[in-house]
Length: 531
Image (cartoon, rainbow, N blue to C red; front, side, top):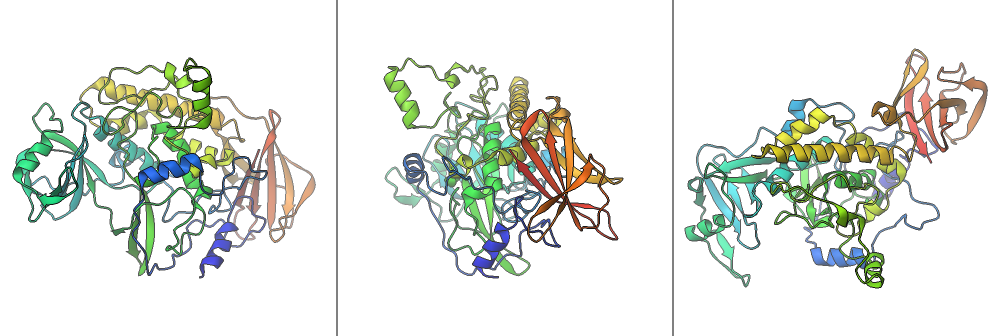
Protein backbone atom coordinates (compact mmCIF):
# COMPACT_ATOMS: atom_id res chain seq x y z
CA UNK A 1 0.00 0.00 0.00
CA UNK A 2 1.53 3.34 -1.00
CA UNK A 3 2.15 6.18 1.41
CA UNK A 4 -0.57 8.25 -0.30
CA UNK A 5 -3.18 5.50 -0.07
CA UNK A 6 -2.35 4.94 3.60
CA UNK A 7 -2.65 8.66 4.27
CA UNK A 8 -6.07 8.84 2.64
CA UNK A 9 -7.15 5.69 4.48
CA UNK A 10 -6.22 6.93 7.94
CA UNK A 11 -7.37 10.47 7.28
CA UNK A 12 -10.85 9.05 6.70
CA UNK A 13 -10.79 7.25 10.02
CA UNK A 14 -11.87 10.13 12.19
CA UNK A 15 -14.84 10.59 14.44
CA UNK A 16 -16.31 13.22 12.13
CA UNK A 17 -15.72 11.33 8.86
CA UNK A 18 -18.78 11.07 6.65
CA UNK A 19 -18.35 7.55 5.36
CA UNK A 20 -18.57 4.33 7.33
CA UNK A 21 -17.26 0.98 6.14
CA UNK A 22 -18.18 -2.58 7.12
CA UNK A 23 -15.03 -3.00 9.22
CA UNK A 24 -15.50 0.20 11.24
CA UNK A 25 -14.47 0.94 13.90
CA UNK A 26 -10.90 -0.07 13.03
CA UNK A 27 -9.10 -1.17 16.18
CA UNK A 28 -5.51 -1.48 14.99
CA UNK A 29 -3.24 0.43 12.63
CA UNK A 30 -2.94 -1.11 9.15
CA UNK A 31 -0.24 -3.72 8.74
CA UNK A 32 2.97 -1.70 8.52
CA UNK A 33 4.86 -1.23 5.29
CA UNK A 34 8.28 -2.75 5.85
CA UNK A 35 10.94 -0.10 6.41
CA UNK A 36 13.90 -0.72 4.11
CA UNK A 37 16.14 2.28 4.64
CA UNK A 38 16.22 4.46 7.73
CA UNK A 39 18.70 7.04 8.97
CA UNK A 40 19.69 7.60 12.59
CA UNK A 41 18.64 11.04 13.75
CA UNK A 42 20.32 13.26 16.32
CA UNK A 43 18.54 16.45 17.36
CA UNK A 44 20.05 19.51 18.98
CA UNK A 45 18.22 20.41 22.18
CA UNK A 46 19.23 24.06 21.85
CA UNK A 47 18.09 24.27 18.24
CA UNK A 48 14.77 22.65 19.18
CA UNK A 49 14.28 25.17 21.98
CA UNK A 50 15.04 28.19 19.81
CA UNK A 51 13.00 26.98 16.82
CA UNK A 52 9.90 26.18 18.87
CA UNK A 53 10.18 29.37 20.89
CA UNK A 54 10.66 31.86 18.06
CA UNK A 55 8.63 30.20 15.31
CA UNK A 56 6.76 27.10 16.43
CA UNK A 57 6.72 24.68 13.46
CA UNK A 58 3.89 22.55 12.15
CA UNK A 59 0.30 23.28 11.10
CA UNK A 60 -1.06 25.00 14.18
CA UNK A 61 -4.69 25.32 15.25
CA UNK A 62 -3.88 28.50 17.12
CA UNK A 63 -5.73 31.39 15.42
CA UNK A 64 -7.02 29.00 12.72
CA UNK A 65 -10.57 29.73 11.47
CA UNK A 66 -11.24 26.00 11.17
CA UNK A 67 -9.09 23.97 13.57
CA UNK A 68 -7.87 20.59 12.39
CA UNK A 69 -9.51 17.76 14.32
CA UNK A 70 -7.33 14.88 15.46
CA UNK A 71 -6.30 12.46 12.73
CA UNK A 72 -5.26 8.79 12.81
CA UNK A 73 -8.30 8.01 14.99
CA UNK A 74 -11.04 5.56 14.24
CA UNK A 75 -14.77 6.32 13.96
CA UNK A 76 -15.05 6.13 17.78
CA UNK A 77 -12.48 8.89 18.10
CA UNK A 78 -9.86 6.51 19.50
CA UNK A 79 -6.25 6.37 18.34
CA UNK A 80 -5.63 3.03 16.70
CA UNK A 81 -3.44 0.62 18.57
CA UNK A 82 0.02 0.05 17.20
CA UNK A 83 3.40 1.72 16.97
CA UNK A 84 2.40 4.83 18.94
CA UNK A 85 -0.13 3.76 21.54
CA UNK A 86 -2.20 0.84 22.83
CA UNK A 87 -5.32 0.52 24.96
CA UNK A 88 -4.67 -0.19 28.63
CA UNK A 89 -6.10 0.89 31.97
CA UNK A 90 -9.16 2.96 31.01
CA UNK A 91 -10.38 0.39 28.50
CA UNK A 92 -9.67 -2.72 30.55
CA UNK A 93 -8.93 -1.87 34.20
CA UNK A 94 -5.56 -3.19 35.27
CA UNK A 95 -5.09 -4.94 38.60
CA UNK A 96 -2.94 -3.43 41.33
CA UNK A 97 -0.25 -5.97 40.53
CA UNK A 98 -0.32 -5.03 36.84
CA UNK A 99 -0.17 -1.31 37.59
CA UNK A 100 2.76 -1.75 39.98
CA UNK A 101 4.57 -4.04 37.54
CA UNK A 102 4.41 -1.33 34.88
CA UNK A 103 6.03 -1.97 31.50
CA UNK A 104 7.93 -5.00 32.79
CA UNK A 105 8.80 -6.92 35.91
CA UNK A 106 10.53 -9.99 34.48
CA UNK A 107 13.82 -8.56 33.22
CA UNK A 108 15.64 -6.70 36.02
CA UNK A 109 19.44 -6.86 36.02
CA UNK A 110 20.52 -10.26 37.32
CA UNK A 111 21.33 -9.84 41.04
CA UNK A 112 23.85 -12.67 40.91
CA UNK A 113 27.30 -12.14 39.51
CA UNK A 114 29.03 -8.99 38.35
CA UNK A 115 27.84 -6.12 36.19
CA UNK A 116 30.32 -5.23 33.48
CA UNK A 117 30.65 -1.52 32.77
CA UNK A 118 30.81 -1.07 28.98
CA UNK A 119 30.23 2.67 28.88
CA UNK A 120 30.15 5.61 31.26
CA UNK A 121 29.28 9.30 31.54
CA UNK A 122 31.27 11.39 33.99
CA UNK A 123 30.08 14.88 33.08
CA UNK A 124 27.22 16.68 34.78
CA UNK A 125 25.91 16.43 38.29
CA UNK A 126 24.44 12.95 37.82
CA UNK A 127 26.77 10.61 35.92
CA UNK A 128 25.79 7.16 34.72
CA UNK A 129 26.91 3.81 33.36
CA UNK A 130 26.03 1.36 30.65
CA UNK A 131 26.34 -2.20 31.94
CA UNK A 132 25.95 -5.81 30.88
CA UNK A 133 24.53 -7.96 33.67
CA UNK A 134 25.34 -11.63 34.30
CA UNK A 135 22.89 -12.65 31.57
CA UNK A 136 24.54 -10.31 29.04
CA UNK A 137 21.52 -7.97 29.04
CA UNK A 138 22.24 -4.30 28.40
CA UNK A 139 21.07 -1.63 30.89
CA UNK A 140 21.53 2.10 31.32
CA UNK A 141 22.21 2.98 34.95
CA UNK A 142 21.03 6.43 36.10
CA UNK A 143 21.47 7.94 39.56
CA UNK A 144 20.04 10.63 41.80
CA UNK A 145 21.98 13.85 42.37
CA UNK A 146 24.11 13.84 45.51
CA UNK A 147 21.99 16.57 47.10
CA UNK A 148 18.59 14.94 46.37
CA UNK A 149 18.65 11.20 47.14
CA UNK A 150 15.69 9.27 45.67
CA UNK A 151 14.34 12.27 43.70
CA UNK A 152 15.02 11.32 40.07
CA UNK A 153 14.87 7.55 40.58
CA UNK A 154 11.59 7.79 42.51
CA UNK A 155 10.01 10.10 39.93
CA UNK A 156 11.03 7.76 37.13
CA UNK A 157 9.50 4.71 38.80
CA UNK A 158 6.12 6.35 39.37
CA UNK A 159 5.89 8.25 36.08
CA UNK A 160 6.91 5.27 33.95
CA UNK A 161 4.05 3.22 35.42
CA UNK A 162 1.44 5.93 34.96
CA UNK A 163 2.46 6.67 31.38
CA UNK A 164 2.54 2.95 30.58
CA UNK A 165 -0.95 2.42 32.02
CA UNK A 166 -2.13 5.34 29.87
CA UNK A 167 -1.13 3.38 26.77
CA UNK A 168 2.22 4.83 25.70
CA UNK A 169 5.32 2.82 24.85
CA UNK A 170 8.00 3.25 27.52
CA UNK A 171 11.16 1.33 28.42
CA UNK A 172 11.41 -1.23 31.20
CA UNK A 173 12.95 0.68 34.11
CA UNK A 174 13.89 -1.07 37.34
CA UNK A 175 14.84 0.31 40.74
CA UNK A 176 18.09 -1.35 41.82
CA UNK A 177 20.57 -1.24 44.69
CA UNK A 178 24.16 -2.42 44.41
CA UNK A 179 27.61 -2.03 45.91
CA UNK A 180 30.74 -0.88 44.13
CA UNK A 181 32.06 -4.44 44.24
CA UNK A 182 29.25 -5.47 41.86
CA UNK A 183 30.87 -3.46 39.06
CA UNK A 184 33.74 -4.67 36.93
CA UNK A 185 35.36 -2.67 34.18
CA UNK A 186 34.89 -4.00 30.68
CA UNK A 187 37.58 -4.26 28.07
CA UNK A 188 38.48 -1.19 26.01
CA UNK A 189 36.02 1.11 27.84
CA UNK A 190 36.78 4.79 27.23
CA UNK A 191 35.80 7.98 28.99
CA UNK A 192 35.66 11.55 27.67
CA UNK A 193 37.73 14.19 29.43
CA UNK A 194 36.68 17.82 29.88
CA UNK A 195 37.73 18.63 26.33
CA UNK A 196 35.76 15.73 24.86
CA UNK A 197 38.82 13.61 24.12
CA UNK A 198 38.41 9.88 24.67
CA UNK A 199 40.84 7.95 26.86
CA UNK A 200 40.87 4.50 28.47
CA UNK A 201 38.71 4.30 31.58
CA UNK A 202 40.31 3.10 34.82
CA UNK A 203 39.01 1.68 38.07
CA UNK A 204 39.80 5.01 39.70
CA UNK A 205 37.48 6.73 37.23
CA UNK A 206 34.76 4.33 38.30
CA UNK A 207 35.29 5.19 41.96
CA UNK A 208 35.34 8.92 41.23
CA UNK A 209 32.03 8.65 39.40
CA UNK A 210 30.43 6.89 42.36
CA UNK A 211 31.65 9.64 44.68
CA UNK A 212 29.23 11.96 42.85
CA UNK A 213 26.11 9.95 43.69
CA UNK A 214 24.46 9.25 47.05
CA UNK A 215 24.51 6.04 49.07
CA UNK A 216 21.48 4.83 51.00
CA UNK A 217 21.38 3.92 54.68
CA UNK A 218 22.73 0.46 53.87
CA UNK A 219 25.79 1.89 52.16
CA UNK A 220 24.56 0.84 48.71
CA UNK A 221 23.89 2.82 45.56
CA UNK A 222 20.30 3.31 44.45
CA UNK A 223 19.74 3.72 40.72
CA UNK A 224 17.35 3.28 37.81
CA UNK A 225 18.34 0.41 35.53
CA UNK A 226 16.73 1.01 32.15
CA UNK A 227 16.70 -2.12 30.02
CA UNK A 228 17.78 -1.52 26.43
CA UNK A 229 14.74 -1.09 24.20
CA UNK A 230 14.42 -3.92 21.67
CA UNK A 231 15.42 -3.13 18.12
CA UNK A 232 17.77 -0.54 16.69
CA UNK A 233 17.62 2.97 18.06
CA UNK A 234 17.33 5.62 15.34
CA UNK A 235 16.94 8.77 17.42
CA UNK A 236 13.98 10.82 18.66
CA UNK A 237 10.83 11.92 16.91
CA UNK A 238 9.49 15.47 16.77
CA UNK A 239 6.13 16.75 17.96
CA UNK A 240 5.41 18.06 14.47
CA UNK A 241 5.71 16.78 10.92
CA UNK A 242 6.64 13.21 10.02
CA UNK A 243 9.73 11.09 9.45
CA UNK A 244 10.54 11.10 5.75
CA UNK A 245 12.20 7.70 5.96
CA UNK A 246 9.20 6.03 7.64
CA UNK A 247 6.50 5.00 5.12
CA UNK A 248 4.10 4.35 8.01
CA UNK A 249 4.46 7.85 9.46
CA UNK A 250 2.16 10.00 7.33
CA UNK A 251 -0.05 11.82 9.84
CA UNK A 252 1.63 15.05 11.04
CA UNK A 253 2.53 14.55 14.68
CA UNK A 254 0.85 17.81 15.70
CA UNK A 255 -2.45 16.23 14.59
CA UNK A 256 -2.09 12.94 16.48
CA UNK A 257 -4.59 12.56 19.34
CA UNK A 258 -2.16 10.51 21.43
CA UNK A 259 0.44 13.30 21.25
CA UNK A 260 -2.06 16.11 21.72
CA UNK A 261 -3.48 14.30 24.72
CA UNK A 262 0.01 13.82 26.15
CA UNK A 263 -0.14 17.52 27.06
CA UNK A 264 -2.71 16.69 29.75
CA UNK A 265 -0.70 13.68 30.92
CA UNK A 266 2.41 15.86 31.17
CA UNK A 267 0.50 18.45 33.18
CA UNK A 268 -0.66 15.75 35.61
CA UNK A 269 2.83 14.43 36.33
CA UNK A 270 4.67 17.73 35.93
CA UNK A 271 6.59 16.59 32.87
CA UNK A 272 7.69 20.04 31.71
CA UNK A 273 10.63 18.37 29.97
CA UNK A 274 8.27 16.88 27.35
CA UNK A 275 10.34 17.68 24.30
CA UNK A 276 11.69 15.89 21.25
CA UNK A 277 14.99 14.74 22.79
CA UNK A 278 13.04 12.82 25.43
CA UNK A 279 11.46 10.56 22.82
CA UNK A 280 12.89 7.54 21.04
CA UNK A 281 12.28 5.70 17.78
CA UNK A 282 13.27 2.04 17.52
CA UNK A 283 13.39 0.00 14.32
CA UNK A 284 11.90 -3.36 15.24
CA UNK A 285 10.92 -6.48 13.33
CA UNK A 286 7.73 -8.43 13.95
CA UNK A 287 5.94 -10.97 11.73
CA UNK A 288 8.53 -10.50 9.02
CA UNK A 289 8.06 -6.72 8.72
CA UNK A 290 10.39 -3.98 9.94
CA UNK A 291 8.72 -0.87 11.31
CA UNK A 292 9.41 1.99 13.74
CA UNK A 293 7.93 1.99 17.24
CA UNK A 294 7.74 5.27 19.15
CA UNK A 295 8.63 5.66 22.84
CA UNK A 296 8.45 8.23 25.64
CA UNK A 297 11.78 8.43 27.52
CA UNK A 298 13.49 10.09 30.48
CA UNK A 299 10.66 10.50 32.97
CA UNK A 300 13.02 11.20 35.87
CA UNK A 301 12.29 14.89 35.34
CA UNK A 302 8.75 14.80 36.72
CA UNK A 303 7.02 15.47 40.06
CA UNK A 304 9.21 18.48 40.83
CA UNK A 305 12.43 16.75 39.83
CA UNK A 306 14.73 18.40 37.35
CA UNK A 307 16.82 15.19 37.32
CA UNK A 308 19.95 17.03 38.42
CA UNK A 309 18.26 19.38 40.90
CA UNK A 310 14.74 20.33 42.03
CA UNK A 311 12.70 22.08 39.37
CA UNK A 312 12.26 25.83 39.39
CA UNK A 313 9.01 27.04 40.98
CA UNK A 314 8.05 28.39 37.54
CA UNK A 315 8.11 24.85 36.10
CA UNK A 316 4.80 24.32 34.32
CA UNK A 317 3.71 27.87 35.03
CA UNK A 318 5.21 29.55 31.99
CA UNK A 319 7.69 28.99 29.20
CA UNK A 320 11.39 29.59 29.66
CA UNK A 321 10.85 32.57 27.37
CA UNK A 322 7.71 34.19 26.07
CA UNK A 323 7.12 37.63 24.58
CA UNK A 324 3.98 38.29 26.61
CA UNK A 325 5.39 37.18 29.97
CA UNK A 326 8.58 39.14 29.33
CA UNK A 327 6.61 42.26 28.47
CA UNK A 328 4.56 41.98 31.66
CA UNK A 329 7.69 41.83 33.78
CA UNK A 330 9.33 44.65 31.83
CA UNK A 331 6.47 47.14 32.07
CA UNK A 332 5.66 46.24 35.69
CA UNK A 333 9.34 46.62 36.62
CA UNK A 334 9.23 43.04 37.89
CA UNK A 335 6.45 43.82 40.39
CA UNK A 336 3.79 41.66 38.71
CA UNK A 337 3.66 38.38 40.63
CA UNK A 338 2.73 35.42 38.37
CA UNK A 339 0.27 32.91 39.77
CA UNK A 340 2.86 30.13 39.97
CA UNK A 341 5.10 32.21 42.23
CA UNK A 342 2.50 31.93 45.01
CA UNK A 343 2.95 28.17 45.28
CA UNK A 344 4.50 26.66 48.38
CA UNK A 345 6.37 23.38 48.57
CA UNK A 346 7.09 21.08 51.53
CA UNK A 347 10.67 20.29 52.45
CA UNK A 348 10.84 16.87 50.84
CA UNK A 349 14.20 16.39 49.07
CA UNK A 350 13.08 13.14 47.44
CA UNK A 351 10.16 14.88 45.69
CA UNK A 352 11.50 18.26 44.67
CA UNK A 353 9.05 21.08 43.93
CA UNK A 354 5.64 19.55 43.27
CA UNK A 355 2.27 20.75 44.52
CA UNK A 356 -1.44 20.92 43.70
CA UNK A 357 -2.90 24.07 45.25
CA UNK A 358 -1.72 26.45 42.51
CA UNK A 359 -1.81 23.83 39.74
CA UNK A 360 -4.00 24.92 36.82
CA UNK A 361 -4.28 22.22 34.13
CA UNK A 362 -5.53 24.67 31.50
CA UNK A 363 -2.60 27.05 32.00
CA UNK A 364 0.12 24.43 32.47
CA UNK A 365 2.87 24.54 29.83
CA UNK A 366 6.15 22.68 29.19
CA UNK A 367 9.50 24.48 29.10
CA UNK A 368 8.88 25.75 25.58
CA UNK A 369 6.06 25.54 23.02
CA UNK A 370 5.15 22.06 21.79
CA UNK A 371 3.21 21.99 18.48
CA UNK A 372 1.10 18.94 19.39
CA UNK A 373 0.24 20.39 22.80
CA UNK A 374 -0.74 23.73 21.27
CA UNK A 375 -3.03 21.97 18.78
CA UNK A 376 -5.14 20.14 21.32
CA UNK A 377 -8.90 20.61 21.12
CA UNK A 378 -11.58 19.88 23.74
CA UNK A 379 -12.11 16.31 22.49
CA UNK A 380 -8.34 15.65 22.68
CA UNK A 381 -8.31 16.96 26.26
CA UNK A 382 -11.33 14.86 27.20
CA UNK A 383 -9.71 11.75 25.72
CA UNK A 384 -6.72 12.17 28.04
CA UNK A 385 -8.66 13.43 31.07
CA UNK A 386 -11.03 10.45 31.18
CA UNK A 387 -8.04 8.10 31.21
CA UNK A 388 -6.36 10.02 34.02
CA UNK A 389 -9.61 10.02 35.99
CA UNK A 390 -9.73 6.22 35.75
CA UNK A 391 -6.94 5.93 38.34
CA UNK A 392 -8.48 5.41 41.80
CA UNK A 393 -6.90 6.65 45.02
CA UNK A 394 -5.82 3.14 46.03
CA UNK A 395 -4.23 2.57 42.65
CA UNK A 396 -2.31 5.84 42.83
CA UNK A 397 -1.01 5.01 46.31
CA UNK A 398 0.10 1.57 45.09
CA UNK A 399 1.96 3.03 42.09
CA UNK A 400 3.66 5.64 44.30
CA UNK A 401 4.77 2.78 46.53
CA UNK A 402 6.93 1.46 43.67
CA UNK A 403 9.32 4.39 44.26
CA UNK A 404 10.23 2.92 47.67
CA UNK A 405 10.74 6.30 49.30
CA UNK A 406 12.48 6.04 52.66
CA UNK A 407 10.40 8.95 53.97
CA UNK A 408 6.69 8.01 54.25
CA UNK A 409 5.81 11.72 54.12
CA UNK A 410 7.27 11.92 50.60
CA UNK A 411 5.10 9.05 49.37
CA UNK A 412 2.00 10.49 51.00
CA UNK A 413 2.62 13.96 49.54
CA UNK A 414 3.19 12.66 46.02
CA UNK A 415 0.04 10.52 46.13
CA UNK A 416 -1.98 13.43 47.48
CA UNK A 417 -0.68 15.71 44.72
CA UNK A 418 -1.55 13.18 42.02
CA UNK A 419 -5.06 12.72 43.41
CA UNK A 420 -5.76 16.44 43.69
CA UNK A 421 -4.24 17.23 40.28
CA UNK A 422 -6.23 14.35 38.77
CA UNK A 423 -9.47 15.86 40.06
CA UNK A 424 -8.57 19.33 38.82
CA UNK A 425 -7.96 17.85 35.36
CA UNK A 426 -11.33 16.10 35.41
CA UNK A 427 -13.20 19.22 36.49
CA UNK A 428 -11.45 21.38 33.88
CA UNK A 429 -11.86 19.20 30.83
CA UNK A 430 -15.15 17.47 31.59
CA UNK A 431 -16.73 20.92 31.22
CA UNK A 432 -15.63 21.42 27.63
CA UNK A 433 -17.54 18.52 26.04
CA UNK A 434 -20.45 16.40 27.18
CA UNK A 435 -18.60 14.04 29.56
CA UNK A 436 -20.41 10.89 28.52
CA UNK A 437 -18.77 7.70 27.31
CA UNK A 438 -18.84 3.90 27.21
CA UNK A 439 -21.81 3.74 24.89
CA UNK A 440 -23.50 0.41 24.31
CA UNK A 441 -26.89 -1.08 23.56
CA UNK A 442 -28.63 -3.09 26.28
CA UNK A 443 -32.12 -4.49 25.86
CA UNK A 444 -32.76 -2.24 22.85
CA UNK A 445 -31.70 0.88 24.74
CA UNK A 446 -28.68 3.12 24.22
CA UNK A 447 -26.88 3.47 27.56
CA UNK A 448 -23.78 5.39 28.60
CA UNK A 449 -21.90 6.70 31.62
CA UNK A 450 -21.87 10.31 32.78
CA UNK A 451 -18.20 10.50 33.81
CA UNK A 452 -18.71 13.81 35.59
CA UNK A 453 -21.42 12.32 37.78
CA UNK A 454 -19.30 9.20 38.33
CA UNK A 455 -16.47 11.41 39.62
CA UNK A 456 -18.87 13.27 41.97
CA UNK A 457 -18.44 16.52 40.04
CA UNK A 458 -22.16 16.72 39.33
CA UNK A 459 -24.14 15.36 36.39
CA UNK A 460 -23.93 17.17 33.06
CA UNK A 461 -27.51 16.23 32.19
CA UNK A 462 -30.44 15.89 31.97
CA UNK A 463 -29.93 14.47 28.50
CA UNK A 464 -32.21 14.35 25.48
CA UNK A 465 -31.79 11.92 22.59
CA UNK A 466 -33.07 12.46 19.06
CA UNK A 467 -32.81 9.62 16.54
CA UNK A 468 -31.91 9.94 12.85
CA UNK A 469 -31.46 7.61 9.92
CA UNK A 470 -27.91 7.68 8.64
CA UNK A 471 -26.60 7.20 5.10
CA UNK A 472 -23.15 5.66 5.59
CA UNK A 473 -22.04 6.60 2.07
CA UNK A 474 -22.84 10.31 2.15
CA UNK A 475 -23.04 11.02 5.87
CA UNK A 476 -26.53 12.50 5.47
CA UNK A 477 -28.94 12.22 8.40
CA UNK A 478 -32.75 12.19 8.27
CA UNK A 479 -34.75 12.82 11.46
CA UNK A 480 -37.13 10.11 12.57
CA UNK A 481 -40.35 11.85 13.69
CA UNK A 482 -41.21 11.14 17.30
CA UNK A 483 -38.09 9.00 17.84
CA UNK A 484 -36.67 10.31 21.09
CA UNK A 485 -35.30 8.82 24.28
CA UNK A 486 -32.90 5.96 24.89
CA UNK A 487 -35.07 3.26 23.29
CA UNK A 488 -33.94 2.36 19.77
CA UNK A 489 -36.59 3.23 17.16
CA UNK A 490 -37.96 0.61 14.82
CA UNK A 491 -36.76 1.32 11.29
CA UNK A 492 -35.34 -0.58 8.31
CA UNK A 493 -32.07 1.24 7.61
CA UNK A 494 -28.75 -0.37 8.55
CA UNK A 495 -27.53 2.70 10.48
CA UNK A 496 -28.95 5.03 13.13
CA UNK A 497 -27.55 8.16 14.73
CA UNK A 498 -28.46 9.25 18.24
CA UNK A 499 -27.82 12.95 18.81
CA UNK A 500 -27.39 13.45 22.54
CA UNK A 501 -27.73 16.92 24.05
CA UNK A 502 -28.02 18.46 27.50
CA UNK A 503 -30.24 21.35 28.48
CA UNK A 504 -27.54 22.62 30.81
CA UNK A 505 -24.92 22.73 28.01
CA UNK A 506 -26.59 24.04 24.86
CA UNK A 507 -23.44 24.16 22.72
CA UNK A 508 -22.31 20.61 23.39
CA UNK A 509 -23.48 17.42 21.70
CA UNK A 510 -22.41 13.83 21.12
CA UNK A 511 -23.50 11.95 18.00
CA UNK A 512 -23.47 8.17 18.41
CA UNK A 513 -23.79 6.00 15.31
CA UNK A 514 -25.17 2.45 15.51
CA UNK A 515 -24.97 -0.36 12.99
CA UNK A 516 -28.04 -2.59 13.07
CA UNK A 517 -27.18 -6.17 12.17
CA UNK A 518 -29.79 -8.62 10.96
CA UNK A 519 -28.41 -11.53 12.95
CA UNK A 520 -26.44 -9.59 15.56
CA UNK A 521 -27.17 -6.98 18.19
CA UNK A 522 -26.78 -3.26 17.37
CA UNK A 523 -23.18 -2.08 17.57
CA UNK A 524 -21.77 1.36 18.34
CA UNK A 525 -19.57 2.22 15.35
CA UNK A 526 -19.19 6.00 15.60
CA UNK A 527 -18.81 8.70 18.27
CA UNK A 528 -18.45 12.36 17.36
CA UNK A 529 -18.11 15.05 20.05
CA UNK A 530 -19.22 18.58 19.18
CA UNK A 531 -18.80 21.75 21.23
